[in-house]
Image 1 (tube, one colour):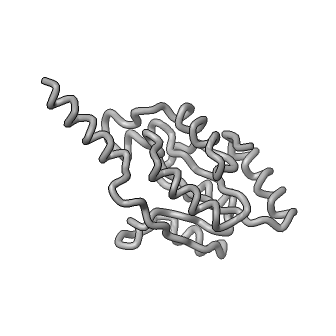
Image 2 (image 1 turned 90 degrees about the horizontal axis):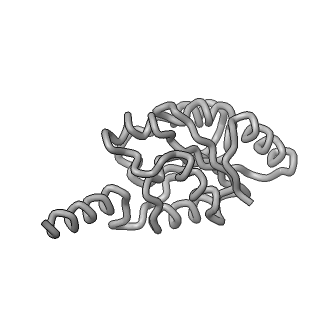
Length: 161
């Protein structure tokens, strides 16, 4: 059963997992317009450990990072959709631009990000390395992204005029 949690609840669940000797995988993102690429990524992330927590960028941080008009779907709805997915144990909405504070609070065994971070700096790397966590990069399914869906939708709209 997955759920959307406040940070204190997430910390309690993290401690319970630790007490049971279970590993925690953590990832974060916007997950605006949930699609099969997201599901594939979350399934691969979950396969790395016993539980998967997802840090979800809230509306303000999504607007700051993705630009005006985003998110298309409000954070509470994105959190509910994510929490309903089988691989996801819990969702935590956060408003910072990076997941550093969540990572410090939860200290997951494995921090997962998309393969696009192979070629660019991972802002949370120092935080994860400081507490001894492991970083895993997971390749995205090709041609599956929210931006591509938005662009295809815009083309449909343009062709109907």
